[in-house]
Length: 564
Ligand code: DGJ
Image (cartoon, rainbow, N blue to C red; front, side):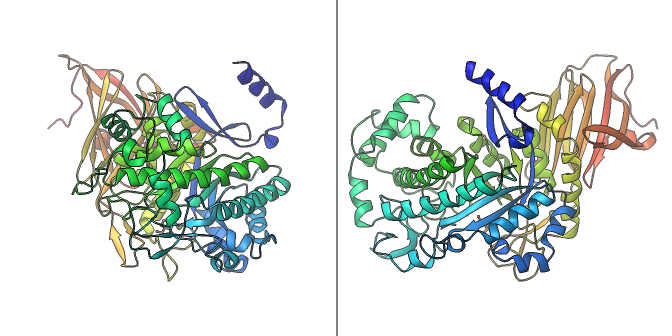
């Protein structure tokens, strides 16, 4: 309590610009604090190679595209190979360019540290690491073949080299970014072993046969009863043992299943998670010593097309190994999902378990999903991937113009009501709804009223699936964010969704009806009305393209329906 009072007092004394970005937890709510107040990240991520060239960014007017789209934050990469091209010699030219340009435009930056791993592989390590596999060891599969994956298992030389470089970057940010344009760091990218369930190198074999480390056991004991359900299950099934190797404590994994939500090779996944977390936790901690910004790790999801460790990166920061990451990497503040699948709600639910505050650092361009994630899960932010170029050779994430236009307009709507939204985080006054072709109907309760939502989407949006095989359509979907401003007053942002009302408890002679419906928008968190919706158009509220409406409900003594 005393610490909290001191912190609040400090916030009051320090100028907003000097307050370092942080995550502030109070009860169940975590706010990202930027310049002393809660921040909603309406962001987007650049393609992987974009920020490696100043010329390229200038020629394609990337900053112009970002501004046109109304993002308030850009996620861009800083890679180890460019930051430390020769051991001990640093080059921050690209990083400075990103910070200076973001600052000039009043944008915030999240930097991705592409270092030991990117999508499982180790392609971003500098040449001097690539050329020395004896010193910086690599993962081996069960046949003893080397993979292009730096081993996270007790690979001290690699871990220290990565951590030193990251600390150098954070020192540079501390020295050159006093007003905190950089608000957060992503440490590595979608880590985990692909094409093998775990590392089988001699060092890894020794660790696999050795005792489960004491720090993990201590964490398990302290959190018994509150662990991720599958972890609790396998530990309990083996008698809650506290000494022994991975298979003694967590069991010999089941391996065969057709269910992508099951946990085959779970002991192997836990083992890899521990070692990735140990390594990345050390990198993050060294960086935080230089500048204590919030830091997270993003995950390539376990999904219907890949439910086995090795099909998705084994050991990556996924919900089923959240406890292991927390035990081994306390310096990593949260685990974040990259969501390209249609299993949107399932993913959000899984990542919320264990009170993990998160943002979605990569996703498709669908505003319906953004509205839902913010409204229902009170996420720190939402960021589509590949915001700089739409189409062409380099676009991994191209989409159709209409989808983009909706996203841009949605961004502007959300940014202009961000403080109203954030003020309701953790309360029932901020809700979200998501419907799609598989689940086309859903309802929300607001006091005495029930709102019935149904899908009205004409077509799915197109989104490149990133496999180079062309465009795929995501499932047709619709979404809404509902902000309750009074017992009968709702502000609703929606896309491809239709709403009908009824009373929660049906009473004879009383019906839910709308007193008024108006379109509009917020400007600096103040409602500015537009069209008043009445006549034939007031019987239900319908959204096609994204828009905001204000609805005032009341209890009428008659049914408000077409009278013919
Ligand atoms: C996920 C990765 O994290 C990104 O860096 C990028 O490669 C996208 N996939 C491409 O779809």
